[in-house]
Amino acid sequence: MPIREPELAATLSRVVPPGILIDHRLITAGDEKALLPAEAVTFERSVLLVRRRSASARIVARELLGKVGVRDFPLIRSPRGGLVWPPGFLGSVAHDNDVAIVAIAKDSEFTALGVDVEPARALPVELVSTVTTLIERQRYPEELCSSRALFVIKEAVFKAVYPIDGVFLDFHDIEVDIDTGSARVRNGRVIEVILATSPRVVAIAFDRTTMCVPETSSGERRL
Image 1 (cartoon, helix red, strand yellow):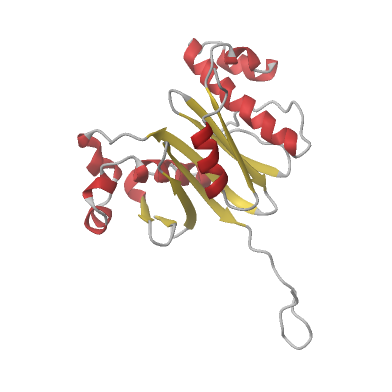
Image 2 (cartoon, rainbow, N blue to C red):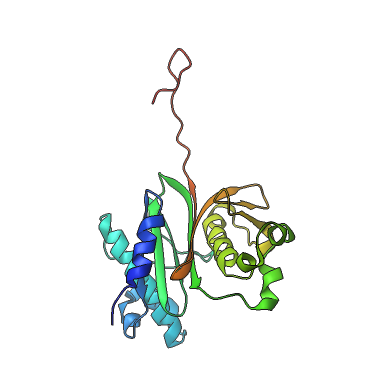
């Protein structure tokens, strides 16, 4: 059984922004054995599928962290619910029934990062109005609103901003602007978003760190 979906790997390589590392793994029987001891403790009462999916995501995370020199770092949850990443990094994990996906970046370059994945199938009809705002339903074609695109974007945005703001968001607290590649949160925060819709629906939400550029004595910015 292959570890990755070639088409998904190609799609992610095309859309990932500079500075973000992203990868995925097909969830495989036996992945649950990859949990480190500190991680396994938190899943002692979890059913096998939960342990397997969570372990698959951690396998991907460790592979990505290994590329930046971090080895065997246990990913455990903070009291607020998110994962604790190694110093100097931030990241996000997601999975559907078949695939685990992870994105990481340096916290000196990004202040927020979220990722989500779903199968490329329509939302249940009864969830469309729950996920989308009236403005979105007026702005976008029915095909887009009934797809999982806005759902996945909003999930990724929540994962990106929750570590910063510590506020749980409803779907209607996030307004997506597909044309500008951004989403606005109810508190005014604007997050960049990137969407891929084939072979799965994947969204990456992020906020870049604004670097202060010192001025010269003449008032010009030094680049």
